[in-house]
Image 1 (cartoon, one colour):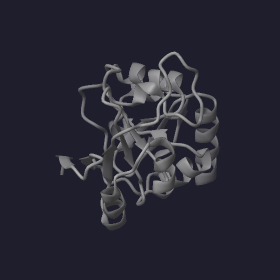
Image 2: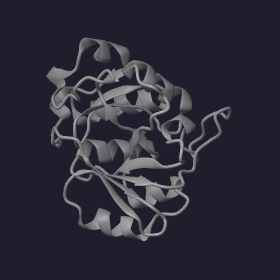
Image 3: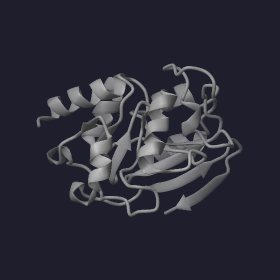
Image 4: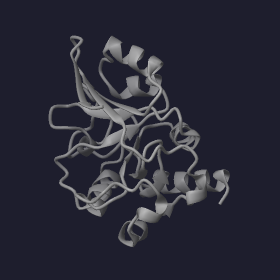
Length: 201
């Protein structure tokens, strides 16, 4: 599979409301269009995970993040500019659709946002495939580890159980994996008044 074939197959699935299995900048992940609540529901179903837990999203830039967050804390700009390892920032004030509303590209799916209205977003700058995929789709993509809830996150394709591989609509070939660290990202939660909480180093 060439990278062009990987983009084509993944984008077809994402645009059609489907799910994908793909290499991220950290571990192998399950993904979908983060503005499509039905696709997000399917991710929870595949993982057998409680949908009261929020999901991490990937964006291609702070400009994209700004479209789905009411106000970006100023410290987020500094963090993104100086950071050289995968870092997920939990932002307050996600712009999400109502639970009974159909999905649209201008609102995050309600079921990928935490109960307090925050959402975790990462810009995978060290992963060419991820950045390219998000950019081509034009909106954030869900990025949650490709495992059944409670089981270890797969750092390599060979560690993904067949049940996960069979459940998604498109599988990116392992040969496309050129930027994964194999480790979870840092997680930092920000507040609008300059609060910074380190969730995971």
